[in-house]
Each structure stands twice: as C-alpha cells, then as structure tokens.
Image (cartoon, rainbow, N blue to C red; front, side, top):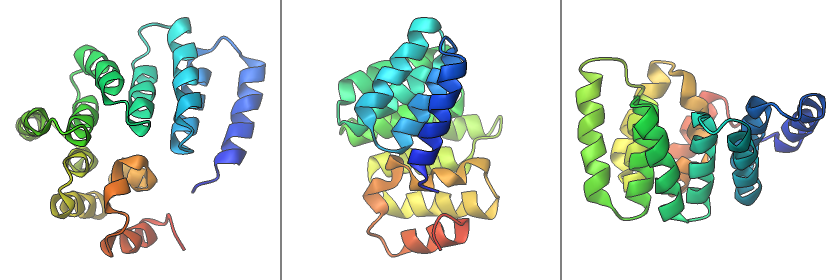
Length: 185
C-alpha cells in the first residue's frame, strides 16, 4: 500500500525491543527494499546475515536491493548463493529475473525451462513466471502470468507494486491490474 514510513516506524520499535534478531533486521531489509531505499536495505540485510549467516531471506533482499541499484554482479552473487541453498521456484525466478535485467538472457531462459519443468512436479506460483518474464522484458508473457496470478488469487500478487515490474508500468494494462488487485483506488 506504499505506507513505507509507517512500516519503518514499526520496524524501529521492533528493533529497539530485539536488536539481535536476524528476523527483525531481515524484515527491515524487506521494508527498505519495498521503499526503494536499496543502500539501506543492503545494510539491514547484512546485519541479519551477520547475526545468522545462513538466513536465506536476507540474501534475497540483499540480492534484490543490489539489482535495484543496478549492481547485477553482486545481485547475482547473492541470489545464486540463496538459490544454491534453496532450490525452490521463488529463488530461481528471482535469479532469472536479474539475469534477464543484466542481459544474460540465455541464463534467464534456462531458468524458465527449469521452472516449467518444476511446475510439472509441484506448485509454482504464477508470480514466479511473471517475475522471470518481467526481467526478460517480455511484457506480453508478464501480463499473461500476472493475470493468472490475479485469477488464481496467488498470495504474492501484491508484489505487483515492486521494482520487478518497473518495465511494464507504462503499459495500459498495469494500472488496471493494480486497481483490480486493490493496490490503487
């Protein structure tokens, strides 16, 4: 809902109560990422990783924040490490997204093949496919999967407001979908 300052104030209170919680620092990294305060998000994720070096979600937010800064090599490094520890579709899709943004389309397409195969064996959120296609700059496929996410009430459809979809914001379909999802009046 873009209420970043309110969320960050709550995060301040949480960290004041429990400053050594990697979960609290990770949560702050997520909030800062969503507020597009990437440098601060990287630092918050690093604090979580210093408290728990195996905290995959902190690698996720750190990697995505590096992507937000257009530092794709560091982003890929973080997301590759996360995907190496968790072979689930989310980390694969995020890595593929950044490969696409960085121009490494062969690697992004390879991950698309992996996700498609994975979807034959287990649930893969339509949001994972939308995120991957958005990174590759394929607006048609991105909207196809976003519509599937909306129709199936995929839990992560709120991510439509994130930087993953910056490349399609000027498309006329974007504000309509944001309105239907409830992220715009």
